[in-house]
Length: 317
Ligand SMILES: [Mn+2]
Image (cartoon, rainbow, N blue to C red):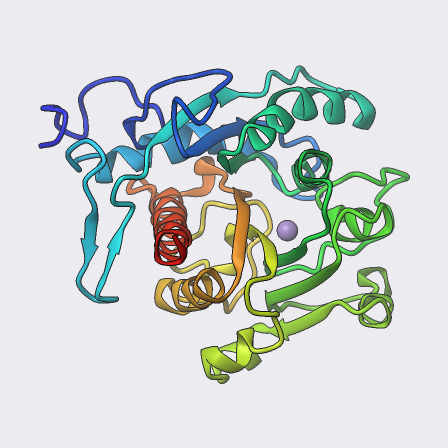
C-alpha cells in the first residue's frame, strides 16, 4: 500500500492527493477542483454532492506508491508514472448565486491553476458549470481549442424558464461566446423537441455522434476528424454512460455507453490530440446505489484519461 493507508482510511481528497488550494507546477501536474453546484438542473438536483462522492470513490485506487505508474493490463498501458496530483478543494458557491457571480467564483479559482500550467480536472456539479470552466480555461490559455463533449443531451437549449446558464445551455453559450473553436459530441440520445436546437447546432458546425451510431463505429472513425495534435478540452457528463452502470445522475436516459466504449473513445482522443483539461459532471450520489457505481465509473474514466494524456506528453518529450 503506497502511503501505508487502506482505501477507507485517511482524508478523502481526490486520489488522496495533497490538498493545495493554489498550486503551481512545483506542487503537482494535475489539479482537481470541485464545483459543488446543482441549481442549474432542469430535473433532479443533487450533483452538488458530486465532488465529495467522486473523492470518496477515488480512494479505491489511491494505493500506488508515490508517483509510480499503475498498469492497465487490459489496455496494455502504464498510467501516470511520475504524474503528481493535487486536490485544490472546492469553489465556494452559496445558494442562488447569479450567473455573473458564479463566473467570478470559478474564474478566481480555476484560471490561476491553468495559467500555472497544471492540467485541470474539474468535478461537477451539474453541467451548467461548464460555461464558467471553459471561460476560465479560455482566458488562461488565450488560444482557441476544440471541445469534446460526452453526453446524453446536446445541452444546446437557448434558455430554460428565462435562465440562459442552466445545465441545458452550456454548449450553445460557450460556442456563442467564442470560447471554443468547434464541438464534437458523443453519446447523444433520447427524445428531442425543437428546443434542443439540433438543426442550429449542426448549422454552427457541431459534430454529433449519436450514441447508437457511435457504438457501431470504429473508434478511429469517431476521432478521425480531430486534427492530430490539436488542443482539445473534454467535458464528460456522466449520463453519457448507460444508467445500468451509472444511475446516479439527474437526467438519465435509456441506452448509453458501457465503460469500455467510453474509455476507448477517450483513450483515442488523448492519444491523437493535445488534451488540455477535462471535467466530469452530473454525478448525483443520492440516486446511486449503495455501491456508488456512478462515482466509481466517473473516477476510473478520469484516471484512464489523465493517464493517456500524460502518456502522450511523455512520448513527445
Ligand atoms: Mn450535459
